[in-house]
Structures are given as C-alpha cells and as structure tokens.
Image (cartoon, rainbow, N blue to C red):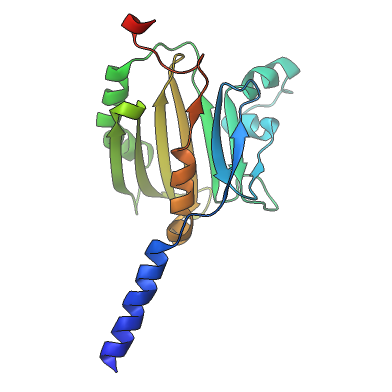
Amino acid sequence: MKRTLGFFALLALVIVLAAPAQAQQSASAPDRSFSLTIPSGWVAIPTLELYLFEHPGRTTPVTPEELAEFRNTRMGFQRPADAWFTLPYMIVRLETGKKRGPQELFMDHVLAEKDSEAGAPGEGYRFREKDHLPTKRMHYYKDVSYSAAQGRKVAMGVYTYLTSRGFLRVAWFVGENELRAYEPTLHQSAMSVKLSPELEYVPEGKK
C-alpha cells in the first residue's frame, strides 16, 4: 500500500514538473522600442497608476507631458483583479540616458545578491538563484522576502537587459504560496524580451 501511494505521489510530481507554461500574448512599448510576451488574459496597468505607484508621495496633478514621457519607459501587467498591483503582476522599466556596457552588466550580476538582500531586509528573506547570459546580454536573479504592503512573503524575479540606452529591467512579483503555479510562465515572459534595432546594444567597434 505504501509503495502504491509513493508511486502516485511521484507520478503527481512528474506531472506538475512536466506541465507546460501557460499561453502567452504579445505586448509592445508604444514606440515599438521593445516587446515581450505576457500571460494570456493579463491586462495592462494604466500609465497613471504606474506613475503614482512609483511616486507614492505625489500630491500635485500629473501633467500630460510627464505621462507621455513615462509611457515609453514603463509598462505593467497583472492578472485581472479588483485593484491594481494585486499579485501576481510584472513591471518593465527602461533606463534612458545612461550609457552601459557588458562590464557594467556583469557587475550588476555579481552584486545582485548583495543588492537584493539590502533591498529586502527582515524575516523570511532568502536569495533563490541568479544567472548571467552573456550571449543574450542579460542576467537575472530571484528572491523571496516579506512584504509589509502585501502582508505576506512575496517572490520576485528581476531580469536585466543591456540596451543602447542603458538597462531594461523586467520584474515580476507573486505570492510565495503561488510561486509554483506562476513561476514558469513569469520566467518565460521575462526571458522573451525583444529589442528594436535602435534599442539593441551594439559594441563600440561594430557601430
């Protein structure tokens, strides 16, 4: 009997691990400078909500000019919910005006664990993994920490791409209890970034 139960438990684990990632849909920046795939059925977070999320102390009205500039450097997506920034969600940030190179990308990777820990102090923090992919000119890391805003532990993945303007970062956030269900799809989305020819990094000697 114990062997039978063990067999079915193992079979269930194999099925979970072999399950394909959820369907994806395409999303692009308004100026078409970059694109990526997002989980099917997810919705875009409005630009104004993204702006206020990044500037929580803002008390004056946001001007149309500020939103127009912000719109081409920020994107956000989440599963449909009653409130914005309900887990799980993801945010894309494009740096502008900061010249970067492969060495800066590598150092960003080297310091990822230290920066991650500094940005997420408190109980329950753990660094999960990181990887550097020089041929794709990107690196990523993943961690888990307690979020006071969410009132629970939240898993995060940050994926950094080298561009002609600096870095493009894709970050996803999901409750730790939902990590197994969402991580394959969120990882697939974050790894799917495509840069336009104008945004793609070109080494100095090849320009």
